[in-house]
Image 1 (cartoon, rainbow, N blue to C red):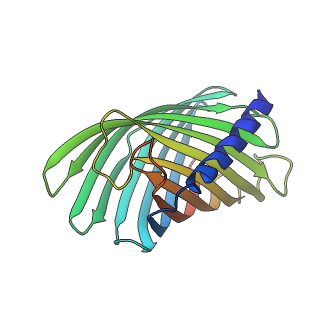
Image 2 (tube, rainbow, N blue to C red; image 1 turned 45 degrees about the vertical axis):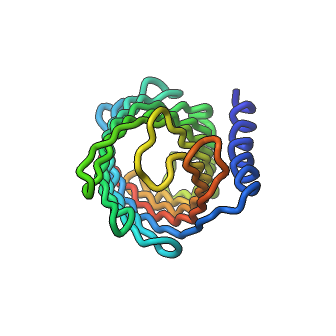
Amino acid sequence: MKRLFFFLLLGCMFFPSLHAQTATPTTSDGQIWFDAELNYTYRQRWLFQNELSFQTLIWGGSHWFSYNTTPDAEYNVNKNLDIICAIPISYTRQTAVLNTFEIRTMLGSRIYFTPTKRIQTRLLVRWEYRWFYDEDTDVWDKGNRFRLRAELVIPLNKDSYFVDNMWYLINDVEIFLWQGAKLPERYANKTRIRLGLGYRLNYKVRFELIYINQDSRNNIEDDFNAHSDIFRLRLKYYFK
């Protein structure tokens, strides 16, 4: 199973890149995201989170920005499985004439393949139902999508992921797939490859700097027609 996950991760990493190279993207931009993730654990099994985020364009295309909050609850079933539910909320100025407000309900699970090993391998599966409001037309649209992310976390200077003063490498791939009607947003289907560096100061405080290579397209059968270079700065804080 571990080898299967490893080769699946490699395949997910290289296939989107090779596919994206078959057509030159019509647009390219750069973005920066600032995140603060607040966490609270309850009776060892429950984890309550709220991620606050500001995202904006820094080059290419028409300027846009977004404010986001993602409250969620996670239940640890056993060492190999978490169950996740969340209600992400966001406000985005997508273009000069398009402002949107979005509410999502998300159900998912995180599968741990090597929970007691030095190198952490995980699979995050999420299904989202989205309510999408266009302020200019005063219209609500609805739709759902499926997200699949293969994750790899490697401690660099320690033998365990769960110790203090630890640097770690982040590498994962995520695929967004639409189901049913699409919403009037910038691009519906996306593939993200992330590479980042994290530092765990202690149990309560962690920092992450992540680069995201994102390719987007309107329909699953289309070539990728937009590319984004995204830089993400994240602070994680655990109250308990």
